[in-house]
Image 1 (cartoon, protein in one colour):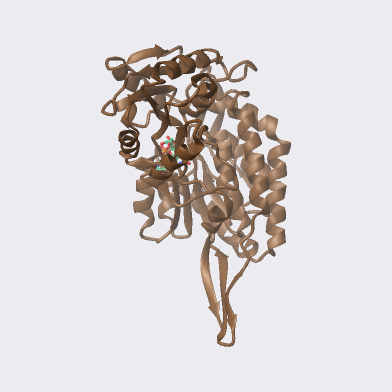
Image 2: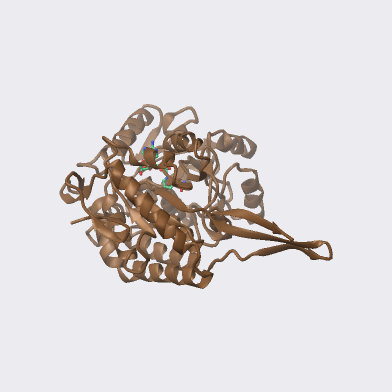
Length: 466
Ligand code: NAD
């Protein structure tokens, strides 16, 4: 049975909702359908815990984070299997085991960070100190694509800085978060991290959290449309916000590449987690000199990837996660087929399986290029002028990530600097690391996660002058 965790206790509800395996449609488990009262209890527990946790010495907070990192590592295989069953991603490839491995690494690294007091001035005229103070109760709202990793990205820096947490996962993937939080509570003081779940039907817990008077900050990862609602709903209580939202990352391939050498990197850039990744390559611009070669090598590499039930050890890609996203990809590909050249895939498979699809000769005016497809369908666009292509890449409401592919690193770097995105990678894509800040510009979000800069977002500044 999957239970919520409120004030360190397992909490179940009479009303529950089904979570099914996207590969088979079979029931994985039932998740509690929380009421607004459960949310209020969770916030009250987190608030009471905050009063104690925020006074702990820094070394104690660090130890709690290290203990959480160990819990993740010690339970990685069990969590990975559950993640595959509810999310669909395979155990192997860049799938569940990879996600659990990354969660352990992020938790471990974030444990080592700290925000010591800074002395701004110390002279005959006086002393000025800058302190970083915890905020209080953090409301964490997560999406369905990387439920464990994103939960860790939210929880660990919050606790590291002396805050407490109420986390609410997506209704599509609540079970791994319920299990994770229950495990973390084995090493945490009661009320430090609470988890509530709901199906978003009668009560929208996320919306209630963003308006809640006793939550001091929302850290939200999800779609741009929902992120905008979070911003509006948070205004009354002047919450601190970190918003990690959608993207439409461009990959730009320069004419000097060796197509065979970059094919694997391009594949993972576009198809990681079946393309259901905020910062995946969602449109690929290839110079006309290498266009046919790059198309051919990318297709050849992609053909070698095994698509199947994620629990099969051979699978590299699984099904799509849910019907809503599947239908979106079907719609965008059906439209793209009338405009471009299908090099691979292009027809839905059984159930929620959609084969990796590559469509060449697309234009920026095609919905598959300018919308966020969030699925295994990559459009390729030919270009011949680098300035034009940079302009096209930047002509988007989003600005999450981007990549430049070239043997000339200095040239690639110059282009990278002109891209209006929070991250740009050269000869790789989505190369996130826990010591480099990550965040979006424009409608991809606000604020940053990871590293020192990410940790600071869980604090307010207090200046003391004497
Ligand atoms: P979503 O916006 O539909 O849902 C995200 C979360 O918000 C869920 O937990 C949902 O229950 C909750 N929610 C729903 N209505 C709400 C409201 N009114 N107020 C507050 N919360 C509410 O997103 P999704 O479909 O789960 O995830 C896919 C999207 O997430 C994609 O656009 C993707 O690009 C983005 N994403 C971004 C990042 C990043 O780091 N930038 C990472 C992963 C996913």
